Length: 205
Ligand code: TMP
Image (cartoon, rainbow, N blue to C red):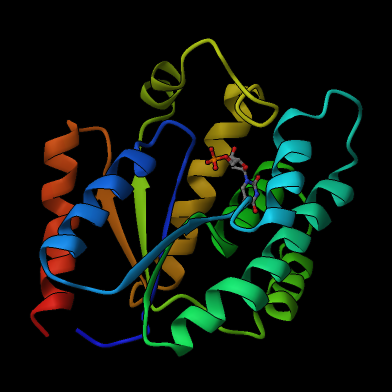
């Protein structure tokens, strides 16, 4: 497997990607791969504070403020944790990254996607993930999985979440070489079979 890979996991709330992340960690352990699992937002100490505001703040948050908080989190995360790890040859697996901002703040909130791409490029120094696994799930199924205890973003309307899903699928269509779209409507084990196929092709190459 190539060293210093950057893999991201994307998908709707309730797509099951965080559960799959645990299985990915087990897979890498079994194959003696040096990996780091992290997440956007909240992959650093500073990012944890931003995550708390982003998910739990109860007052008004303007759309631009929300956008810039996600990007501030990402800037700190990339510069202090993700890039140094990739440079050391570690395989970094990040739960959400640039595509979440395009899907949620762009397609979901309706902010200008060109502007988001520009800001994403500034904070990532234009480095895109080597591979992005998109856990695609039907909006009703995802909502049932999230349940009643919803955070600030999860509480947004079904219409918002449909736009997010559509946005992700458009992104995957535009960059087929980077994205692998997985059917996340299925059981945990069935979804992991799809993940494993992708990982096997990386590990065996
Ligand atoms: P999660 O870590 O539990 O998936 O929660 C993060 C939430 O933040 C989720 O609802 C998606 C949302 N989000 C954005 O709206 N924009 C972003 O750039 C990122 C990284 C996450």
